[in-house]
Figure (cartoon, rainbow, N blue to C red):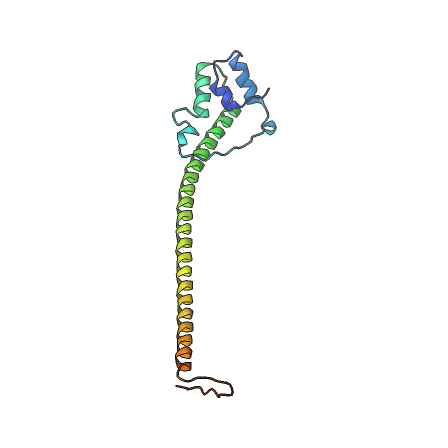
Length: 163
């Protein structure tokens, strides 16, 4: 029945004695905590982090001021570290947004460059094919026009004119 500290700080209106639950949550050794990170990339950062909500350190100090918690330097250290972690997470979110924007731009430019190169290759290949076709046509045309000047019969000798 372990609950996350963050959930306990947020849920003050539950059926349990919140003072005991919060003290229990802060007294759990940190080595027993397991954290599974799930990463969601979305365009709306307000869905991930609510910026209107006070951080863990502010909530802890409010609970101490209200008398729901006794001041404990270790709990305050944990709340401070959670606050720092939250700030790092917000910074990470901004960096990931920027990274994905840049990645999208890079992918678009890469795709445009790929299309441009393919188009150039196709045009070059068509030009090369046209060049060979024109050369073949010229050679064939010269051969057919030159061969019509004389008739070849059995035993005739073919003389080639070199120009």
